[in-house]
Length: 568
Picture 1: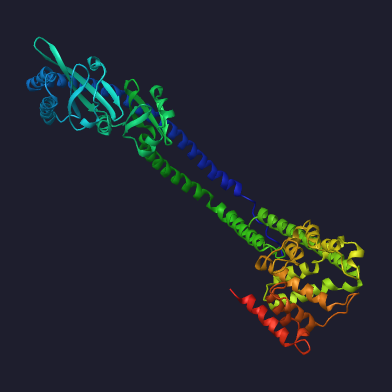
Picture 2: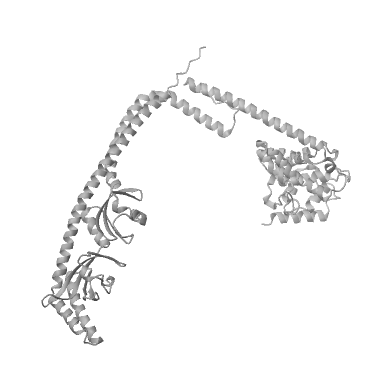
């Protein structure tokens, strides 16, 4: 029976088709975007320059009209009469009469303010003292004005309360005798900025004293106008504020007062780019549809097998069940070859991993047996601790993975004793303080030995912490209660149980019931009460059939330890 040869691998053709279409469309989009943006920038700058000229002419006209209005108001006969009377009689009158004269000037000025509704209209005597002020912002006007004669030349005044455009006209009587000055002031504030924006269609900012006085820009752009940015604006044609590019033109400048108009290049380009991108997307969809029709048969023969292979490989690597081969798709020679190669590779890796693990475990098991063989009284100790620990773990309902970790960790729990001298390890009598301190180092030594083997990492807590106690008096770290890992607590109890029941040179082994009674006596302090209970339940040899050791004292100790364990 002949075997059908799968078709050749053709993904490269399909990818090339779509990639070419996408690259062409992307290049067109980039070029169109750059062209549109350049045209919009030029248009915005040209429009802003035109608006700058128009606004300057309007400003010159406004200044002329304001100066003319100030001159007209200065010709008011009632204002002149009130000011002339004040000038003539204030030196000869008392304080009360002088106050009355000032009130008279103020009333006349209020009548003027009611007709024209200015921000500020004020009367100043020749010495520069403000005699009276009226208008919406009369409280912002200073009490004295320096260099009044030059006020007509100083069209703008920067005060702590704001910036004002000022027109000054003399109050003259009898052959041009100047008895004072009338000042008409308009604030350059948010309302003024809004007026400029309404005329130009562009944003407006007014700055003075190194800060922003008023702005019609968005809040984010206004916040970006830091002092360092403001210092660069007078010479700038463009500025970036809050990641948005603006064209900028200087409208007014006097001293540290600056008035700018700004128009967002990004905002102007956005609508045009949006329409352009929409048209390009329609073209892109049409192009991709044609490419899809041209490559559909390729996708059916190649994409689906690759998807199936990818899903199979993902599931395999997630489950790490490398013994199950990935099935061949039979639709592409290259895909089937890749599948076969992967299966062979995984089989080789699994075999090598199994061999390595087996070699490690065998070597370490032999090392543990060799350690037990050094002392005839502890022969088989590690194997017994491992077997009983697993029985306790099963009683506690541990999963298979935890039981496997417990089995090998318990077998290796005393591996650190390999570094102890025989005269300490096999000493028949009591240990000295120095010898006991050496013994206490074997958990750390064991963990250090095993840490060089990566797959033994889960067993390290058992080896290093199996001598920790619930009351914190264990070693090497003095951990408390639940700080000690569960598996280490199991091995701690089983290790003590086997030590009590095993014979030593200086004492015979004790029975299981005696050992259990001893464990219950110190449950909750030296031993974990839950682990002691699980040990008693798990081992058939520890049933209370030996009534000599199931005394009232033992039962009381067991009950006390369990109560302490379950107390919240």
